[in-house]
Image 1 (cartoon, rainbow, N blue to C red):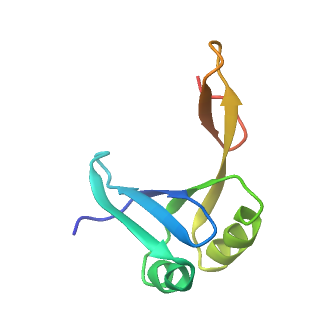
Image 2: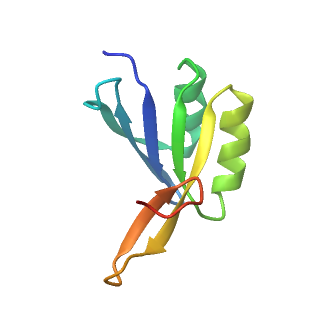
Amino acid sequence: MSQIKRIGIDTSKAIFTLHCVDDTGRVALRTSLRRAQMAIFFRELPPTEIALEACGGSYHWARELNALGHDVRGAVAWIGRWGRWRVGIGGRPPA
């Protein structure tokens, strides 16, 4: 498996969907994890940039992942010019 550079996490109550890319932007891994598997998976990874969907539980996971040495950023939904939802990273609207 290639070195994972960035991970996007889609959160829900029980299942978390992970989309991992490498240095070139190619998909390195796509997987779904249960809540109990999250800490185990991220404990084994070197420090990585993580984009986490903003929701009620995201603050808990941001603290947990930051404690493991990862760089966690929140992804905030913005309404685009045409009324479509778009995602901005770090609280900024997309360019």
